[in-house]
Length: 385
Image (cartoon, rainbow, N blue to C red; front, side):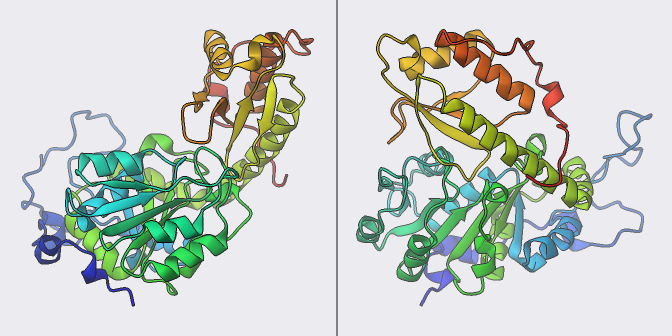
């Protein structure tokens, strides 16, 4: 039976958290002389908003609006400076440096390993299978008494596919002395329920999501972590007191009023994902377009005679020269010869395809100008795809 106290570092359990001025008085009205703020306002006297007061350290307004959307309680939500903050806090809360370990399944999101390295925590690696699925038996055999965190990215980055639910369930049931974190940064683009619906069934389950992808708010740096009330209390205990700025809170709160617009953008991205995948498969230098449940495609370029597009690095460098920017993943486990291509607007996707056709000396069917990226911020929306 999973018990959170069994995996928390002992000093974290007994830690007295910092008590901010906004923790000690939560009212909205009054003469605020408790936080050493500037009483005259912000430096820009003509600004519509004033930020001379500290923000809500627990972001309750956002959590109360977000909870019914996600089907959880507000007390089960932690909001961080991107998902990277809860990733780091989970490592710090559970892993004794140089002693405990985390388990990852490459290829996967790189910050799990980086956070472990920053905290001097060993990393156990069990690669995914060649079809980017969990090798369940090997994973279970690799779990030790010191394995405090098991990371599962689904849909996975950089492969784009969902991990099999049965494998995740098996690990959740077997790893009774570890937290199992399912990173769902790309869940809005997948046709499957979120694991947030299973929080009541598995006390060792943690789910990460983000406002950066489907919500289009990457610049705000706002990540979501869903877990048991007890674990959320621990994360709140060790986080910086005012980790989410007032402008970020205000903009995120307003964004939650536009869930329908978010859904329309997702539909547009899904339609463009299909369009891009179909057209990439027609190019002679493309060997594999991996199936995707995310907002990107992992594309493998392979040998094709003397075709200069046969090498992923050559393709990557040529795209850079044309100011079409993708990610070279060819040195990542199981991703030899692969580029990761985010789904863009129709104009951006056509620009990519035009450059790739030119590399292969194929007929160029469009002559699109180089985009600035600004026109991609608000694509024409559709209600279905």
